[in-house]
Length: 431
Image (cartoon, rainbow, N blue to C red; front, side, top):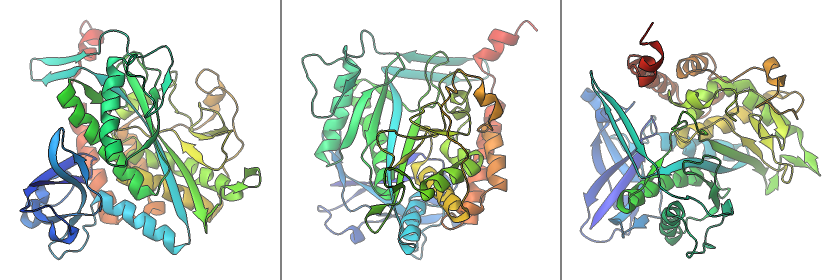
C-alpha cells in the first residue's frame, strides 16, 4: 500500500513523498525515506542535501475516497537521525518543550478565511499575462449567514456549502472536528472555518491538513479553494486570526476574577512591541500587503481593544480568557507564525511591557488611527524589521533558520518586483 509523508517547507508549502509499504504500517519507527533537501525551499545546498523524512504525528490522515493510502504529518531529520534545525514542524515542537520547562501551556485556535471558486487559470510570459478566475455561479449561501458542522440541511445547500460539507466529512472521519464554519463577508465565495483550541502542535497540523484536504477534495469535485490574503481587488481580504490563552497547572493565567490579569496585558504588550517583525512570519508574501491597507477592514494599526474588531488585537467581551491576534493571513506557515506569536507575548510577560490603553474607536473609518503605529507596508519592510528584532525568538528559533528564512523571502520579494502587472498598463501606459 502507499504511505504518504507530508511535510512543510520553510516557505509554508506542504510537500508530499509517497512510498510503498508492503503491509499496513503499525510502528511509525519503521517508516522513513530520503529526500533531496536542495530541492526544497530554504533547506540544504546540493553538496549536503540528503535529509531523512519520518512521520511525527501518530494518527494518520485517511481520505481514501480521493487519495488511497495513509497520510502522515512528517518531520525532517539529518543523516544522523537528529531533528533538522530548519524543519518548521520542529520549531513548534520546541515551543511546546520550552513552555513546559516554565510550567506553562499554550492553547491556540485559528480562524481560517478563504474563497471557493470553480477554477483559476494563470499565465505569465514576456508578452502575455493572464488571470482568469471562474467564481461559483448562482447564490452561494442560504438566507442565514451561519451554519455549523453536522447540522447541514442538505435540501437547502448551495454549491459551496456542499463542497465545504464534503471537506468536513473527510475531516470528521479522521476525528478532526472544527468548532465552527460560516460564510464571510466576501460575496465572491468567502468562507471561514474555526479550529478548536488545542496545543500549538495539533493546531498547526490541523491547519495544514485542512488546506490539503480542501485542495484534494476540490480537485475532485470541481472547486478550488484560494488561501491568498487578497485574491480580488474589489473584495474583502482573507485573514487567519490566531487565538491564544496561557495556562499554568490547569488554570488560565490570562484571567484574574472577572478581569484580565497583568500577564494577559503584558502578553498583548509583547505582541504590539514585536508586531512589525512578526509580520515577516504572519504576513509572509507580497500578496499579504495588498490586504493590509487602510479602508479595507484589515487590522493595519498596532492597537488592542475589548470586543473591537478594528484593532490588531482583540479580547472578546464574552470570553476574556483569550486574546485574538488578527493580522495573520492564510499564506503564513503556521509552524513558524504561531510559535513567533506566542514567543512575542511571552517576551512581553518577561519584560512587563505595557500595551497602553485599549481602543474603542472604529479604526477602519475613524481618524484615531492616524496617531498609531502601523504594520509594515511591504514584505521587504517586514523582513528588515525581523533582521533587527529577533531576540525574542531565540528560545525556539535558531539563528540559522531565521537567516535562511530572511534570505529566502528577500529573493522572493525581489523576483516579484521585476514582474509588471496588468495594472501597470492600465494606469501608466499613456504616461
